[in-house]
View 1 (cartoon, rainbow, N blue to C red):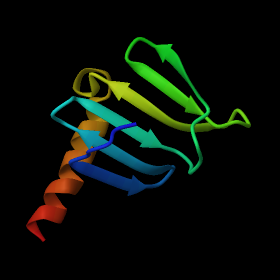
View 2: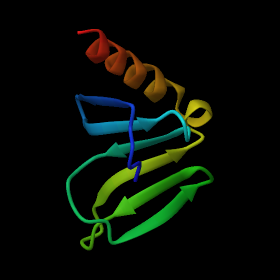
View 3: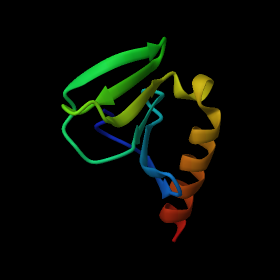
Length: 84
């Protein structure tokens, strides 16, 4: 999971998105819970599961390339919070 984020987006179906632009990593937290295992869904995309097999979150490596829309939305929200 991204430990230091410089942008957070909360909304609709997503519980929380954390972005670390220095590492180019995004984490989409879908539910609260302790991660029991992580599976590489595809290169650059890791899915975290709890003990019951429910998806807890998704980590996206090379986020600017694999999930540019997440980067844009998260960066916009972070900019609005900093200027407020």
